[in-house]
Length: 317
Image (cartoon, rainbow, N blue to C red):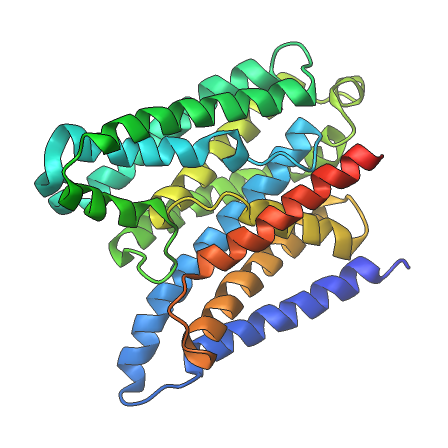
């Protein structure tokens, strides 16, 4: 069906707009100005995370030429927990609680981007490596970071550990509004760079040899893309916390719904699906069902099932 991708994007756009409108207006009582300002800040954070996670996951899968791998599976989440634990362990509860949000945000972004740059450069810019090796490296780094974190956590005071534990889970309802301007500025600049590079994405999806034969400066393009992916993941993780399987969920749904591998359809579809999941899910959790359960737990559960399904389907093939 030639118009299927456009039809899917139209339906997803309508659903995303409906989610945003319901999130902003459902159950409003009292001063509309205050409520819209308060919810608008939260909405801006949700949209930023949706864009960052969706775009970074789709492009990472394009670079690695694999639809199972995501940046989070490669150890990002474990590194985030290690950074949080190290701050608490070496600097203490007082510094952890009172540290300037911009300083902590910058520290987390720099460390995660530095780690990603070293790891991705070794994995994807040298000789072609097997999928099993790539997954194994990600698991090894994740176990290593979690082991260091676990060791330091066992030495912490119980009260300090309780304070630290709150930062281990993604929270979409407590986004720091003072970081939104800086985060959106970074994402906007990176989005402009990606828009200028958009003509290369479909060619990269063909594989390294084909991309080089078609005239793409493979090494330069991949370095730039991996750097952008690292920054996008670092910004979203530092803003809300680790979300391991969310990117895999929306990317897999986008490929399944759109029915094509062209990035002009896959990228907006993944972003719209991420907006629907986050904004629509937060609306249902807060305004309709009044649940206290964190949205990230439900998303990670569904995303984990999706990951297992993709692994089983790949093994069956």
